[in-house]
Amino acid sequence: MPLITRNVFIDTEFFVKANLDFGSRTIKSFEELCEKGELHHITTTIVIKEIERKIKEHIKEALKGIKNFRRKAIVLREYEDDNIQNLFKDINDNDIEAKALEAFSNFIENSETSILDMKNVDLNEVIEMHFNEISPFSAKKPNEFRDAFTLLALRAALNEGEKIYIISDDPDHKNFCDENNDFINVDTLSSLLDIYNKHNDDRAKFVAEFLETKRDVIKAELKTQLDDAEAYNSSSWEDSEVDSFEVTEISDFEPQIIHLDDESCQIHFDVTVKFTVETTGPDTANGYYDKEDGVLYTFESITKQDEQEKEFSVDIDLNFERDGEKFINDVFDIHVKGLSSGIEFDIEENTFDF
Image (cartoon, rainbow, N blue to C red):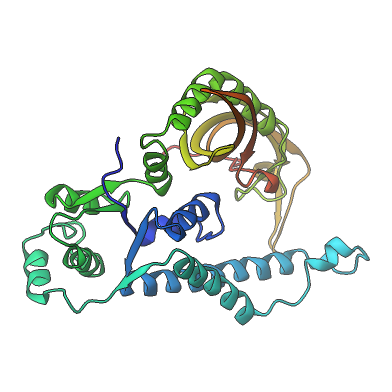
């Protein structure tokens, strides 16, 4: 697919699904292209305010999780171990929030983002769209005023014949793009970067051939990394632990080029992995509940085996050299995002069919 325009709008929900990580490889690659003038990031005052609010909400939720952990782990506080003591160091909520907002502000500044206000939006048109259920409004989503204002502000900013990519997997955004020829919907930012990098570039052809020939090797390396990772059970089955797990299937994947230069390439894809998981925990069904103390006492353990399906984001760093018309020495590293924190499974002691 050729690159049709250099104008790009990114929906708020994309950033939320990316965990508001403005240092991620995908977002950094986009930022660098905008700095070079290769792409033009356009957003609105509404999106800026939405993301700032989301950042504050996520920080608040994360800090709440830390405080809950500390309450449960209070018994560890007296251990004279630097790693454990670091878990209980004071956290300045305001400083954390300020740093997170600064990361977003730096992204906006570094990508030389054009920020549109609402002065050119016709309020009467928004009202008509609302009552006639014209996208982004619909019967199921009648209150999409922020999206409507943003999309109309973008339309008003385009010159005649000018187009813009809309990065969003929202069906209502897709419908709006289908109804407006100057709007081109792309589900993810990595998909757009893939379009950019494949645009009339023989290096991209080499990368495509590399990925096709190395697909089984990539899957084998993925399986090794996943099988060697730590794992934990996050279900409501308290004090249960994952005994073992094994990768049983890795789905096919669609790799996307998010960065490409004369010596290296960064590739991104999402993949679905199936596991068999064995977990052991207290046998609460046969335990004894002491009403006076309000405590459930268990005397035996049980082991459960289950199948689980997990989604992973994967990055590949590919290095190569050019020898005349050929590319040689294709050395690559695979990174599974979040794997260092362990794989989170959700195995319950009891499952009920309703």
